Image 1 (cartoon, rainbow, N blue to C red):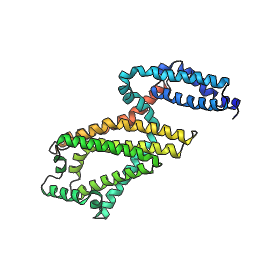
Image 2 (tube, rainbow, N blue to C red):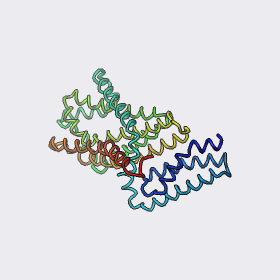
Image 3 (cartoon, rainbow, N blue to C red):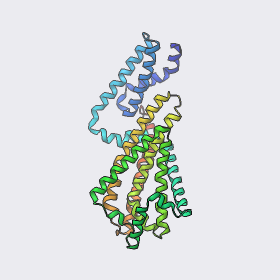
Image 4 (cartoon, helix red, strand yellow):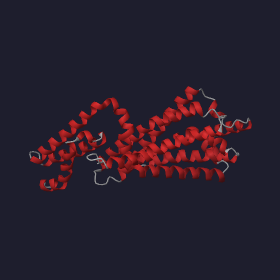
Length: 326
């Protein structure tokens, strides 16, 4: 590409970035990072083809400003943790709402498949949940304590074990996205079919409500955040399959970065789900009203953080001068 064409193609973008960097304190760390990455790419291209030109000198200066703005903003590190979870991540997550919906639909679809398969094939539940679990649960049902499985482990051990396992599943859902999203879909399939089979098993025994009021105390957050982790994997898969105007490598890099942020956001929720499963779910004698309140609050928290809050913050930010998402 001739230098004049390169400048014409990118001039408006550079002017916009130059204006934004003059008031960099109003930009989020995410916006600063995106500006720096794009300017660095343009600078690399310019150095390759127009090494001693004014264009390269200008881009070098502009990229330096972006770099300085990023590291100046890092002085707010005392609030970095809070800023990430309350503003930076929700703003970045807004653009991935479609992948979140797709992850939910995939998971819900396989839940239905698991329930239907269990209804039409008596051996299906055992093939999914395992003979050991089914036999133990049947014994618990005969002893009038169908949810006894949640009482057998020590609270601390159960909390730590469940939390670590859930975080592992989240990382797998994200990592499997590198298989063009197919690996993530497979993991969602496994968990969806297992949940559908599990719930049908108790429905068949006339214990649907008893099981639901118990497992959804922790499962509302646990299952929801597995779906969010599935979204992270689908974001990575989308970056590979549909790079858009970016090179496939750059698109993949951006997808991994966004997916990793999504996974990081799930960790506090998995800790909360692990706490509920280790310390609260075992209280199977708690009043139904209390169980319903816990389940409702858990669902409201998930919907607020991953659906409402990103939309609200993005709409609010759009109306603030100099801080439009890039």
